[in-house]
Image 1: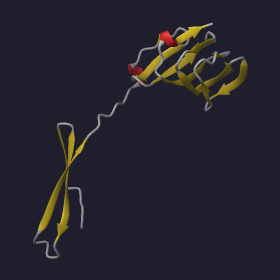
Image 2: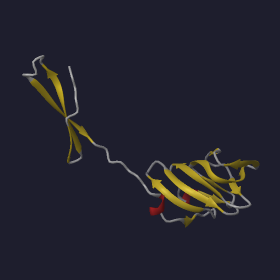
Image 3: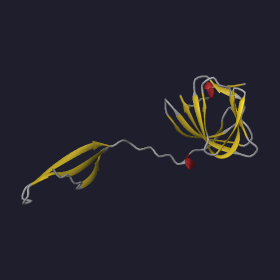
Image 4: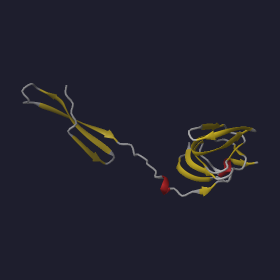
Length: 151
């Protein structure tokens, strides 16, 4: 059985793929089959399309994505965040640029570009820097001011 993509047409959220399912040796008979495959909507967010705001901890946040289950933001800290914790959210920081000191539950460690930090719900934490540190912050459930408790 030979299968070839002959056409690629979009129709109301579906893609139609037409292919040859069989051909006899003399090419006098060709059986065609058409599959209809549902397309999922692809979400692509441009960083520049999201405007930054200042979170309760003092960091500059650019929320890139938020759903009922999770959120992803770019955070920039120019000096330090206020020590805080989240009642329900687990956070993951991935450092994109710069370096700083990450403090979780009184333990401190230097972090820099390429490092990933996991912060569990209820853990008091903050990050501070001499210059600037920029990182991705993944939260589940999504970030909310109501879930953030300042010390």
